[in-house]
Amino acid sequence: MEENELVKQAQAGSHEAFTMIMKKYEQKVFHLAYSFVQDRAAADDLAQEVFIKAYFSLPKFRFQSEFGTWFYRVAVNHIKDYLRKTARRREVSLEDVEEGRLAVEDKIPAREKARADEQRKKTVFQVLETLPQKYRMILTLRDVRGLPYQEIGQVLGISAGTVDSRLHRARKMLRKKMMPFIGQEGGGL
Amino acid sequence: MKCKDAEKRLLRSFDGELEGATKTELDSHLEACPDCREKQSEYNVLLQNLKIEDAEPLPYFWGRLETKLRERERVEPWTIWARWSRRAVPVALALILLFIGGLAFFSPGEEDLSQSEALLLRNDNPLAETKTFFEETRLENKNMMIIFAADEKVPARR
Image (cartoon, rainbow over all chains, first blue to last red; front, top):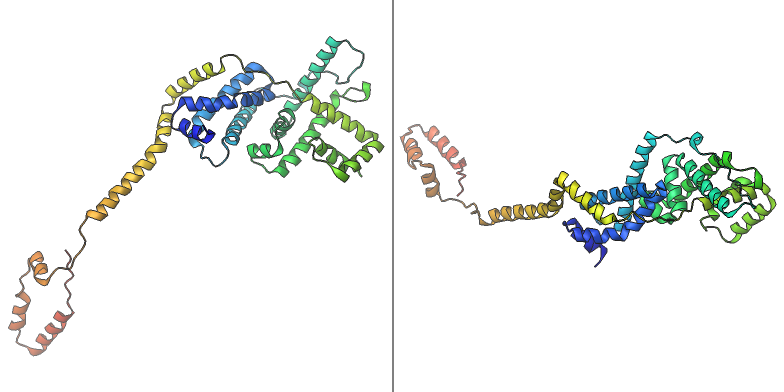
């Protein structure tokens, strides 16, 4: 059955239709949430809230865009709200970022290298958290999730040109903020 | 090429949007400029570190979600109305339109009444005015009465 037909049935109150549509988006929404919080339990909670929000907002969907775009927008807006609330609770600053040199050393045992890789990722994501929300959002959608420009534009309600300029500004900002963590040894990050 | 322009192109190159002459120009600049080369390697590592392995939702995702939905629906019964209203509103509008249409179709139209019907309807004495006319003795008054009587119209509708 076509997605729009299922959506109509779900709007008329069919739980079965709603479950069928949502199962299609389960992974996508969970991965999106996970990209922002990097914690399985938190991402699971966040994804469930997104589905609940979509369920109650479903009557408002007027078929003026693709259902998938509308649903992704609901998810992104909910995640934005969540980040805003959690940011208020815990102000993240660069001082909170764990000291971890990002220099890649060649002659270290595999286990240590894996730990260093993990720490490096953690540092990058901690610094990412300190960026203004719109830059964090676009970097996560593009560089973490790998969404195409067009889809990012539709989800955030901005033009492809704005996606381009905002993304480049965000990458520059992230690099600048990462400078204190850039290792001197090895001549790079 | 200036380093500032090189950085712009470099950032664009990460999205695979650079080709042809612009790419060649950037490559030659990078070859000649150690600062930009370093920048390129920093961006590369940064973007590489932004890639994460996808995790899976916790077990019983749908079972837990369905329980939450049932609980919320009990708390927010208006949502059931919201779903039904999508059908109820157009149906109610159609019924109202049908009722108005029926009223317009079945109500009798207006028709002109005959003079006798108008008099009967208003319970008028048809000779009352004629009597005063015949009783009038002055000729000029009589003429005036004739003029006014001619101007009078009897708007009466069934």
